[in-house]
Every structure is written in C-alpha cells, then in structure tokens.
Image (cartoon, rainbow, N blue to C red; front, side, top):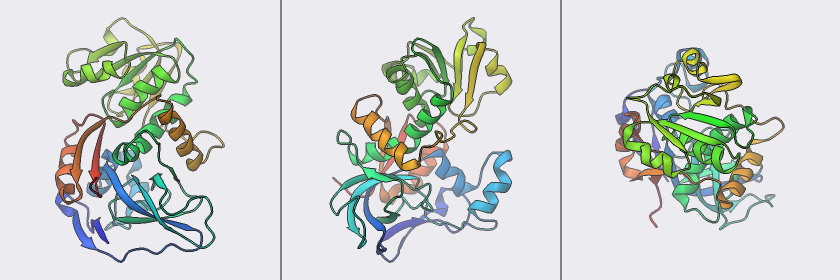
Length: 310
C-alpha cells in the first residue's frame, strides 16, 4: 500500500510517499480502506516538532526524542471496511466508516489502517461524503468537549475567538444549534461572512477590533486557537463567566469513551447540528503542499486529503 511517512522532524518536505505492506487484521481488528483524511495544525506541529513550551517534554517522550516514533501522521479518516478479523461482529466488510486515530498510533496518511473492533471507528454519517466525515472527527469532538465544560444554557452569550478554524467553525454551529446560545465570532475580515453564515449573531475582525474593549460581556469566552492572552480574555466575562482554552479544556466527557463520542457526533451530524467546513481538498500526492498551506495559519475550517478518487 502507499503511505506518507516522515522519518525526521522538519519542514513539509520531510513527508514522502513510500510503499508498505498492506496490513492484515487480527481476530479482533477491522481493516479500513481509507478514502479521505485531513491535515490539521496538530499534524503540522508533530511533523515539525513545534509544540507549546508547556508540552515540550511530554511531546518529546511521546513523539520520539531524536526522530519520530510513529512515522505515519493523520489524526482522522473515513473509508470503507475492507476486511474484519474472525471474531469481529460490530462491523462488516463494505461498511462506510469514519474514525479517530488518536488511540491507534495515528496512521491516516495511508491507503489502509487497522483498528481494534472496540476502537474509535464507527459508521459514517449518512448525510456526509468521505472528506466531510473525516473532517468532522477532531474539530467536532474538540468543540463539543470544550463547550460542555461551560455547562451552557439556552440564551447565554458565547464569544468564540478563532471562529473560522477547524474547531471554531464547529463551535459556532454547536453553540447556536445544540446549546441555543447567542454567538459572537472573532476572526479575520475575510472570514466574517462565513462565520455569520454558520450562526453567529455578531462577528468581529480581530485585526481591527479588540473584543475586550467593545463594552460587551459574555457568559463564556472560548479561545478555539489558543492565541489570545488568558488574563486579557477574562476581562470580557460576566461575573461567574467561564473561560475556555482549546489547549486545556478539551477534556473527555466523564464516563464517555472516544467511541461513544464518535457515535454521538454521528447523531449530531445527521441531525444537522453542525457540518464541517471544507476549505481545500488535495490529492494524496500533494501532501507537502497541503501541509505548507495549513502551516500558514489561514485555513477556513478543514483541509482534506483525498486518497480514493470519487
């Protein structure tokens, strides 16, 4: 099978396509033929090893001290079940699925990937294509987990900083549709119309307007890109308001497994509570260009890598 690997940390050019043996599922495993994956800022940070200072030591130990321990990136994917192990009953060959690779050693940048039967792989949302399904996993799950930390109530006012990114675009939709909040989105001027179309009542251009100086106060301030100073952001909170930061508050819901979260995302997607925004779609062979684009920090929503042409 074809796979994209990196064997040293560095620029996007560190990624290259190789031929690897096609994996064979064990008795309790599922083999997925991958149709689409994504490039996230997390993929770019792992590839270049540009992680937040507070995560440096853990990241070195987890990712690899001198070189990458897991050479195939790709945090989320969608495809079809190609084969199942002898004892698998939850899924069957031919089933369209979407999945997170968080607990499976990454590996979305390949034509095939094995998952444990009880791993984070679930039937694909029926109303989304493969690229949209892949793009819904990380940003959707992160947005949902963060917003739940705030215990949002209908009618509360929420400000989302970085509202046009992968997490932010989902957070705007979920805050409005699922939680019934009034949303203010903060993004660049080029993305104001997009964020408003997703359900934001108010939009602010962060290059021209400081949301802490607008005279408005919020029940929740959510920094979906972890780029605004915490102390300054808290100035815009109402008394008793909740500040959320995507780097610190994407904790799993108590008692919920990642598979249960994925099944919940499927229900929310099929019910129309949110839909991932797709900025660009690149073919597998243009992975370097895709990483270069995402690394610039201006993507709107998600960047999809198409592995199987449709």
